[in-house]
Length: 455
Image 1 (cartoon, rainbow, N blue to C red):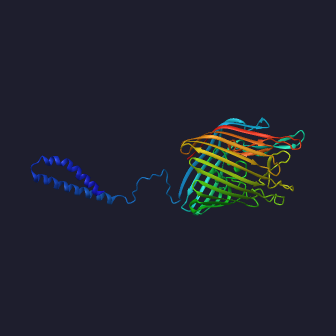
Image 2: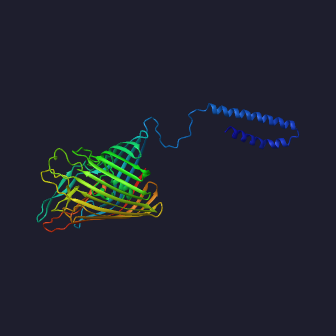
Image 3: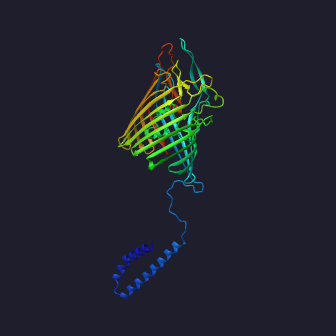
């Protein structure tokens, strides 16, 4: 830096000094001026050296980090993600409009995410969610008739119709290596979020196993996950309570869930998963009653290349729920009846196919088709069919706007589907009776503007 300053000073001085010297015919006078300039330059160099020597030793360039906490406790980041929509829903049971048929605005999800990194090994996460809670009811058949008689009962008491914030994730993490990361608390489940990453449009709809109640996105327990071969192979394995992140209660037995993924090339991913346990439903009160064990097997495939995102999911689940052989309502526990009566054993399977194409960085189109048979052993004719199509606009990073059409049909029974307005659930289909030959069906459709944003 000294040499550059001196060279600049010399050049500047000579550029002005040259005309003066050219006008003088006295060579001695010119030499005297040059000697004086040299002396001034030497003084300037000494001043610069003195400034460098006396500058604070810890001087740094201004930081480009927006917020930095350097108190020996690590660093914390805060983020938010929200899913919302405005549109019209039509839900019909045997041709009659039922809830949530209406037009309006809805917040599907609202995540507040706090990540804290203690050091390169230890970290923690808190993710909250929100849900509109009110009294939940269900229709119970009191007589199969004819005529069919029903009554409405409260299945759970809410908080007077308010939106409540609750914990979705709360865990401590230890990164021992890329191949072995341990989590303790409420952590991401191995399967459903993995499929979400392949699907890419979670803000439009949950994955099939999630929306039909065969998989949780998070649960309380212990998890180990990692990647090997630079991401060629990934895995996640959990020991959990089984009731999902909304229910941290202990039960008599823990459940097990696992998943492996393989990406032989960057644009192709295969996955396989399993679940086994009692879904957090066995306790000291029903321990000696007859019971079943729940199990689930999963396969998934994802392709993401040249603007296309194509994939699919298949599942086979046993004893998650069972259908009523007289009404077709698919809601009873497949684990326990909480009595000396043995619970019905039932099997479900289904598949989901999706595709999307990005025309450019802003515009894309998407579509999805699901088919499931929830009660293959008890009410084999019970069937659920769902599809959605839409167009997505991404005006900027971390913001999506989409025009969406959804359609669902439930035949010969009734299902409870997760993902309705205000983070709740809704029923599609009707109650019938196999003894009087009544067939039931439900039709659901929605047209809406969907959005997600995050920061």
